[in-house]
Image 1 (tube, rainbow, N blue to C red):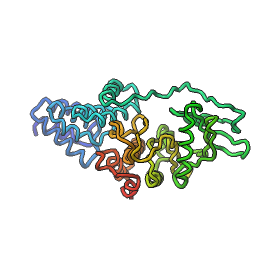
Image 2 (image 1 turned 180 degrees about the vertical axis):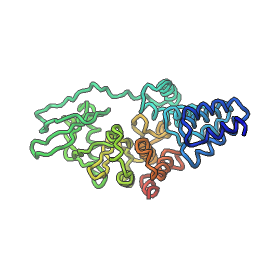
Image 3 (image 1 turned 90 degrees about the vertical axis):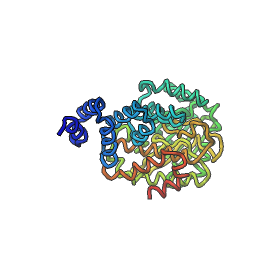
Image 4 (image 1 turned 135 degrees about the vertical axis):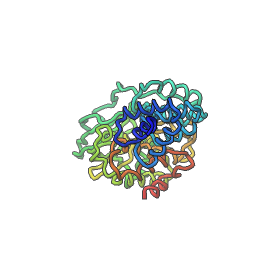
Length: 370
């Protein structure tokens, strides 16, 4: 057996440490066996798990060989920041700036200062003519007249661009509630009323209940969900709470189907806006940016906007489908060692893939997940 053949076999052996595999591949790139090594790694990735760092190395080799389409295909199921940045560069080089921008936003969501991400984000947004929405000021404080609000604030549980959410106690009814206080009651009165009206109109399974609203003082009262948002479980990497994924991911698709059947696009499907009851039942919340199908799209959340929405498309249910797929990807990053997740990887791929191949709405996602 020749030394090169031995190195190739060692490269593909499942017990080869990643550092050694990367070293072997780098050496094989200097030999006449480079093409065979690339082909062998990609073939193995079809039926077995190949470390993403090795996939990125193979894709980089394909780029160096001028095989950009093959490099993009090699990276299609990758999720690491390094892989996403390389995919973004390839998409931008192919004049698909909107898809490239969506990938960079996913990287910035994890690490706002990832090398080169912000520069590309700014440059590609400007090229697309997309306005940059300032990030919420974390120092913003609640401005409300406490005597007018019959609640005792217990703790802050969430903060976003529109307002702050508190765990609070309703003094009159002696129950826990979620109190959302808008940053600027004078400016955001219409959005507060819109959020309340849409949630009430959609009241039912999978939708957070709204109890009261006071647009003059800028607050909204909703049901309290002690377990909190999916975002917290993802940050804590609470695998036990996320398994089985069917318990919450399927009813979430059903809730999205109800929203779409009523003619609405939620526009902010992300882990922070998905609450989980103790039983695991999900609730969609925050309908402040909901719009009717075909209406102008509002600004969205970093990392969860579809390429088409970034490119300026009007409100479309497929944009919520993309957000759903991104949520599934986030969960898969935490529970990735579960061998029963193949179906959910396919679901995430369909929902975040090419626009025409995505389910057209929540009902399509329900059919997809079975």
